[in-house]
Image (tube, rainbow, N blue to C red):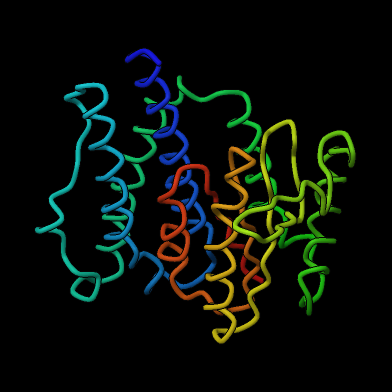
Length: 249
């Protein structure tokens, strides 16, 4: 592989990760919770933004991309909510700028995966009419969303197919968009007790699905267990190819 191809591949990977960061921040923006406490994840976002911005500068030699001095960034417990909101909005603005700069390295598959993720993030809650008791119920709601969008089963997506054998185990994604090389896995998080198990399952799913598909999208339908959405998402989205959508009931 030539140096130019390696550079393009690295920038394409960065584009995917910056897009994931931007979407994670947009999830926080869309939350209907009170402003008090809503913006407290700004430092986590700044840390992730710095890592990606630094990688971009290293790959391109760019001099017009800003980063943050994390040693001077205040602790969230020492700022009032509107100060936290201002910091969050500045980091989001810089992330959006970096995403726009990297957009030329996006491909059609990435755009299509983003379309699927946007559909789920913006509309899944609307089609869940009662509190789900099982992941199957959530999967059914998700499939109804796909059908309503015009996706055709067997042509655009499949359900519970595309088995993956990894480390002596078999993994079956809930949905697969073969044309986008995207596996979609649904998790129903009922309470705080189930959070650790959910994280463990997701951690095991990531290497398995990425061994076959270019990307995996976790749809976590949360009944109230996740307090810090930013921390939950970013802990997984540091890895290229991993997307996380947290949908609050």
